[in-house]
Length: 211
Image 1 (cartoon, helix red, strand yellow):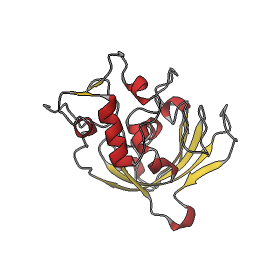
Image 2 (image 1 turned 30 degrees about the horizontal axis):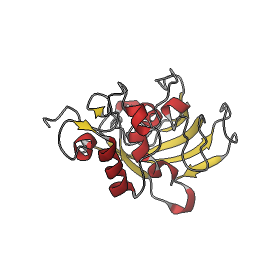
Image 3 (image 1 turned 120 degrees about the vertical axis):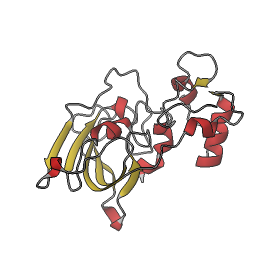
């Protein structure tokens, strides 16, 4: 499953780009809304969602094979994808593009590289620089739990900063592999050798914890 397989990288800002496009506004199309959709419960940041989706390389993409499907939750009888919205658990294009949906609503999202998987891509099917098209359907909405503070989890010595060693150790333990190349450079924006709480783009809860 492409999306779930790269969530850790997306949550840690691995898809961050120099691209100036930081909003998916204007690239969202609602293709179906059940009767009374906008009068009922709508998705908001912090909600736990269940979504069916199909992802392809967009026809407008400068990279990759246009129209090629790279993943779908509809294949092989899979369950809907379950995640918390607006907390950095998915690519930024999803966190922005799935707000204010009702159960049963369907949308098409056109996600530019800066809000997707950036210059690095993901796996063999999503090349760097690819613009992606997702067709999605909201299957369920529930109140989410308090957002995970991934910064605090990675900060093993609790000194309020993340070193390359700490981030690498987290990837080794949780993902079973090495830290993605270039991740520290992308997250360490002031180039002082560590990632501060303010620099960290992964989930860190609704407010800063006292560390």
